[in-house]
Image (cartoon, rainbow, N blue to C red; front, top):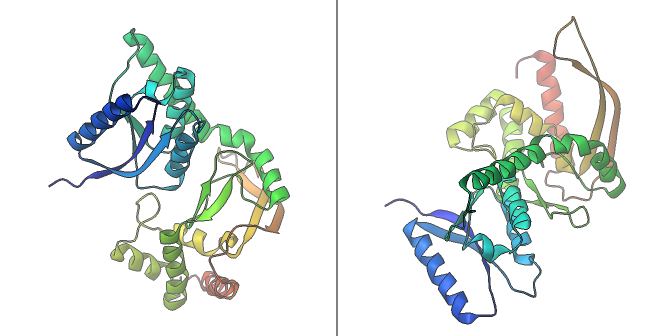
Length: 285
């Protein structure tokens, strides 16, 4: 039997109990038809001001094993189609899609297709281009607040919260176990190659379900974020030997204590650093 796929479920509950029961019945039928199981259900009413919807999008950004959101219809989310488009775009940014039980397409098929293209374009832009344009402001903010505010969180951490006012860095327990094992096993093996083979043979995978490379492990083992330090390096890029790819030259290196939870002991981190330095010196790691 095919394994059930986990989904998030969102329902806006009206003041009409009969209508709510009908919506719930149609959703249950849909879930059964497509062999979906509900990981978490999120609800809103006229009094919650989209709190359930925002919570759902927050969870979609920090949990990496749910790729679909099920909702009854666009109109059950909001009567404002621009707001619904924004919500769909946010879900796409988090590598998920939304599936509707009841399809409410626009009357003109070409407009409906254009609508989907616009949502996809905004999602791709915000995921790849916009962060670069906001990087300077975010780096400044991180050093003002002591909270990481840009870039991807290292393995073991996730962002939680949508706005700058409530954004936090939280730990992901199952990833923390993996990170601690990586540090402990490197001290045991004293070799990136042996550590890589151990993890890959064991079936341990990266956040994106890929095998670990030596470089990925090196990046983890040298990341001071795990011992509570925020870093920001400012580079100048210069052309070398007329090559298209420019070489980064470090101009400034800044370090401050972050407010996020430390998951690696400083003594263990320093011990790993000494082994890495020794191995690099002898080029036998």
